[in-house]
Length: 141
Image: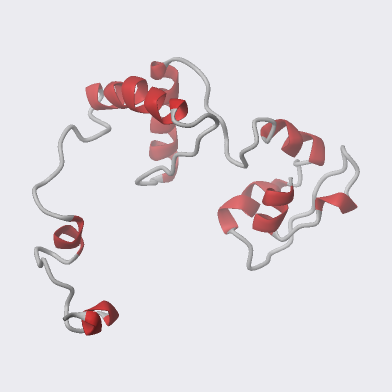
């Protein structure tokens, strides 16, 4: 709860366990506070969500069920990627890579190979060097 409080800039100690948490617009992480806008979140609900220690939604199920949920998020929101967090390291990542990624690839929702080139070449449209106007280019030897 302390970690989530820091992300939302909300002191959850001021709320009773089943009291609705009031949304207040702030400079906090917007994705963290967005769910509070409906005023149907309580400390109890947050504690249940964070029972495994993370502040993110935990998906549990077969590879097909997890893939279904991820694909629904993409179709409903238009998002273009996910940040994975773990409950157990490295097992959480291994399970995702070995079980969910192949299912997403089978469906055509996850690439099966990468384009040639380095990340820098992809970000800077084929250039292996930072553009002259990039701050980092001043550190060339």
